[in-house]
Length: 67
Image (cartoon, rainbow, N blue to C red; front, side, top):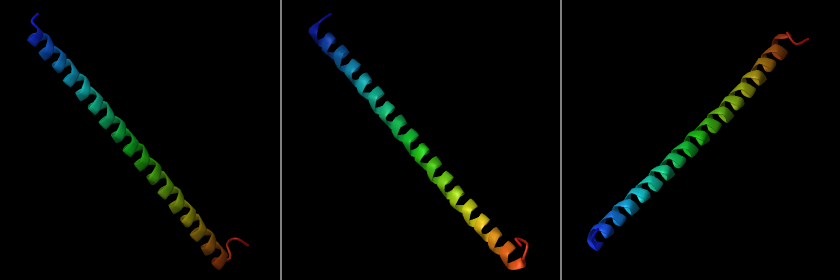
């Protein structure tokens, strides 16, 4: 193989490796963003559930159901 061919082959291998690394990093970032969104939604759901339970208790107290 001539040195020019070897150099081109080497550069192509480097480019492929860099592309794979960038794709891997993008997948990691997407996964992290999805996990963060999931956690935010779960926290929002918990807060909503707590508010609904509080409202239910307030209604029960006002109507005398809790007595």
